[in-house]
Length: 602
Image 1 (cartoon, rainbow, N blue to C red):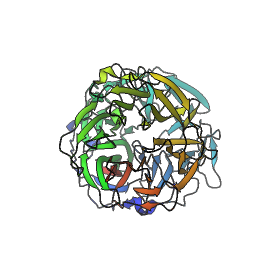
Image 2 (image 1 turned 45 degrees about the horizontal axis):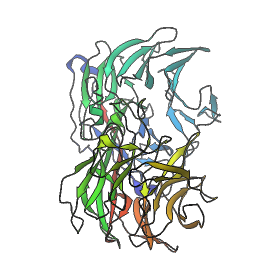
Image 3 (image 1 turned 135 degrees about the horizontal axis):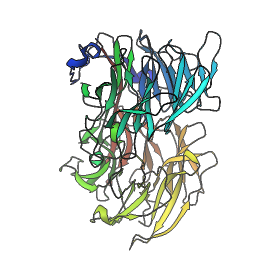
Image 4 (image 1 turned 90 degrees about the vertical axis):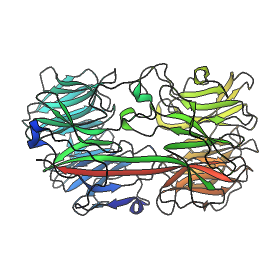
């Protein structure tokens, strides 16, 4: 992640500061000697200027509890917990560090995600580890044995006394930790049916199931094994077998909490529970540490000339105006990690002429898997939207049976009557209409180039919705890919957010054939900040990192010139959309809290 604005996004919390949250603690009588006691406390917190990207970011803690690593999509940060500050000058840790962890001696191991693989901190230089770059390494407590698994892998590999061995499991490994005796390890495994299991694995032996039917997230997680080897701490959404149907409900109460699993009986006890996701448990010294997400969104409106934001709909994001200005479409569901994006659905909120909500959210696009806010065609006849539609409940993001494309539906019809407009999408973005209601512009990753999106133009028959043509929109030479594209309401031209090879972002205007490309402004952003035209086509509004280090709304004239920061909200503002009467900007307000907590173990 870029260092720009870090000072404004970070705040340290003293070790004596108590966690002011609704936290439930239950002590199991049978294993009280290794269960948490007392009150939890917040140790450190970050508020990154991102959108969804930091959902799975986590804190790992050194064995002595003096340092922590913040593992994020934009690189690793090293935290000095004794002083409560980020150690930005730490050698070997930068935005290019793909992953890092500590060994039992507290030495730092890191991966740049390249062929160089993993490197281990030593007295004089970084030593090479015989571990693949995409592996997650874990050491036995005395440091003599090493085990690891790869991203998306079903195999745990062991390196002990110069020998190599592997154990294959029936599903994707999402977490790994050694037993205290160093003779075996525990693997958390996500299965195709949506359940997880805790397996005991050892070199040369078949895995043994400790507990099946666990309700764990499908992605990267951790296991914290107590020192006496009787308890494993896990992050789970419940103590029951997961219901894949419930995963898709936008309002289901399925945040993750920390549970203690009795390794002798398989019994589960909730030990930490609070609003938001509690996950990635780690034991260091006499404490159990974990990461807590406070990720909340709201759709707000701001006057077109700038000013303070006013909430229209809580727990919502990604606004889009209906052409008559009487509704704002929104996405609801939030970023809960147990059901990542499965629970996102689209709703509409009726608003009056002053952009005040006059209704509760009305169901608009609801189905299995991710649905983003639709764009109304200017003639008011069609809805176009990005969806991962699946015909039946699926257990995880992009599971078999799900799609990733642009869908089309006539206004007033049901989700069951939607038309799949494209069949080649990969991480498709949101669509926007040309003023003639015949063409759509959207972007999608290119096959073979993950993370690089390019824009497409789809032409439809406005009478039937039938797809007539899709073609690539040519990009300016300096633009490697796009994050969003939107059509002018008054002219046949497209504005787009372009990305360069170094990840920087810029705002461009081009013709639909790619000609007459004009760059309006370069800006700082670590996410999909959003973009829209004013209703008269004279200016563009976009999201970028502001002078307070958070995402804010800016405007720039269509012909170019100096950008102007319109908002200075205490939280992040992004995804601006201008009302048809040119009076209001609807936007997503984001609150992003990533805190490290701890509680003493008996």
